[in-house]
Length: 120
Image (cartoon, rainbow, N blue to C red; front, side, top):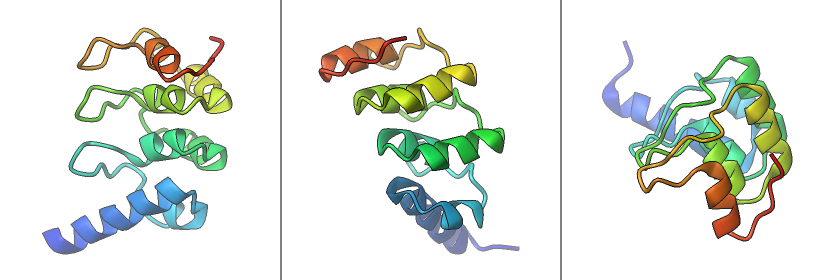
């Protein structure tokens, strides 16, 4: 049985690996751990433009519509940074286009607010 501290450390390491795009570390671990803000590896990878990690996570059947504590999907994260290819990957896996976050913003609204241009 894993202790709470070990699980938290493992979760933090996984999230860091997803954030920086370290595919091998992401997939040596369970890919569904959120951090305390419910930000998951898919959110980090989408926000930071790591297409290869996003593809592998989606192929592992992670939930493309999982929300973090602000109600945002990974699609919001991709649109926030203007990662069009990742946005298209998420949409292809049935990410909700008109999902509202806690501030009533859709992914497209987030993209336009940040000056992005995500053609959907």
